[in-house]
Length: 238
Image (cartoon, rainbow, N blue to C red; front, side):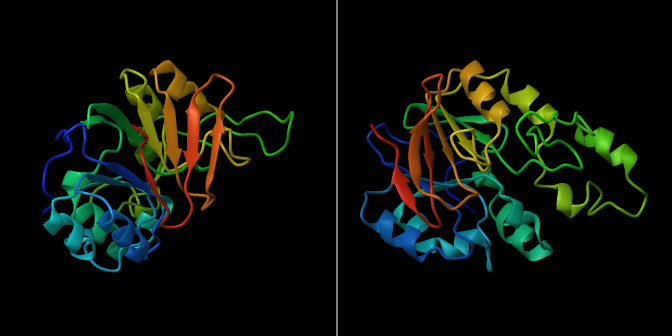
């Protein structure tokens, strides 16, 4: 079990490190954290855990680090990748909620957009954006056949899907940092609703993974964006 629940607040002076998609390679993350005093590590999805996450990050946890995470699309590929993250470290999940870490309010937006449910980006400039095919998980479940479920709920392939209801839930909250797997429009494959959500909720920073590209940018509305590469570690500026 990971130390500290999602609502735990690290000391203001403790470091907060974000890590880009590990895809099973936690070595660079372990090395980077070892150069800092214990704080909070936030994984941006696509952990690709070949073993339970607490076992993979045992040196950090034993040293006093708190570990938080959001889902990426590859975390719902197989029963094993799901169980080794969601089943093994549920206390670290910050998806669709706001947690305060080191005095900073952070919201987690897990998963990815999928055309089967909602894909709010046109394939080409000027083309219309298709409306959502399902606004809620309950609505999608009603559209599926009786044999399509997994463990009493949605199919595993949709456990990482973003729904409009996720944005509606987060839009009622206030936060300083949006931690997302998908990218805002500073990336060529980004999505405008992420820009709008961050602005509506008062965020000053978006940190995302998924595309394995390291960059810094600023949205037209002034919100800073940091994209992280594979297993790249970046400290939250203080």
